[in-house]
Length: 522
Image (cartoon, rainbow, N blue to C red; front, side, top):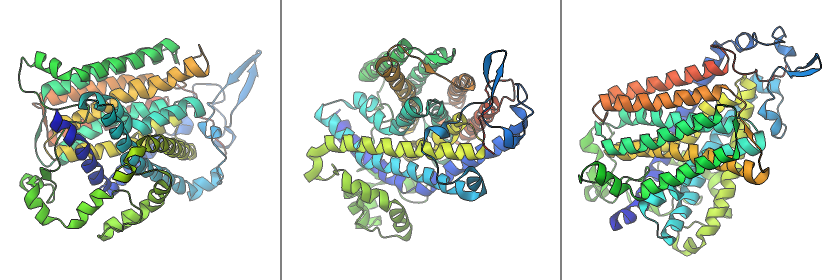
């Protein structure tokens, strides 16, 4: 265990630095998801498909505002109030955004994704590591609690914004979409681009998928009636307490099920490999060029890389290569802002201010998450895409892509269990804490005895699809011999496309009438 505690934080810092270098890949992936969503939405012919089943369907597009009709003394609402009205008024009109200004909002949302990655990686997670050290937590418990918060902070704050600000489904949609992205896209990307066949441990996959399935079943049961009661939110939180206990006694449980077999150091996506032992080199296609002992590796790399490991978030240290200079310039406003307002606990002289860094970075995560959800809401409204669909697709991909890159990095090191545990463990936290905590605060503290309403009936069907996705994914892994390879990658990515397609069609009432349309402006 001593070696694990020593190697864990350094391995996480190593992964954070490496995935920052893959920023362009992350941007492209998120834009592909947005483009796919927009294309699918356009193909459904929104103006015709989801307006035929209720009064007012004959209204022209330019006339389709929020329609309140009084019939027989009953107030009839024929469209859903868009969440955009819960945010400050945009500087551009809807017509200006449709003529091209929406691109600026997409860029702003992408920049917020990047800002969240920086503040989480360089300040929030590092301060959480210090807290874990001060509390003398084991890697198992730390991974299931504080480090899970670090990796899922954007989804958590998106859910908080959805409950307390927009009063809509964007937060729930983000978490559901992120869960599907984690189990299908992350496994698919790791399978396709690991550069080798990666073998998995049956126990690790079974443990995480079992806990994840219980979480999804609980969520299905609670949102079925479209409302969340106070006791239902508490059940989700207590289920996560049970998950923490499972991780606490993980070694004993694994020893029982494996009948004393060998135990691998795997903990909620924080399985330990020591970056002092291996390093990335080559083009990633040749396994012999990817894993090299650190001694020869140091001869192949310049001293500049080591300097950046010591000062990962300095706005005053210019990197060497042109690509890194470009990335540094893009991130400079964020780096400078965080440098002025937060102590860098990576530096020995600031280490004792870890609580200041923790609370300060929490504030910045809240601010960046607010702007992120705001921009995504504006983009969805402009393109005529409902908030829940933007949450399931664009927001989910934007908040989950950094985890995807981290999982890919460890998969290329042959750590398949860690890659899969990272995705499944994040899902358990997102569902039980990301939804349970905001719902508990609303129903027990803000308004005692109140209910949280789920506006979109289609979300229940999306959660059903979520359960189906993990079942089919684990079944595919089993049939494939517990290996991550190209065949499995194509299979799970195809499942992701099917999930997105069916979820979007459900939200647009293609199969049956589920939701009122979003109120649009001319």
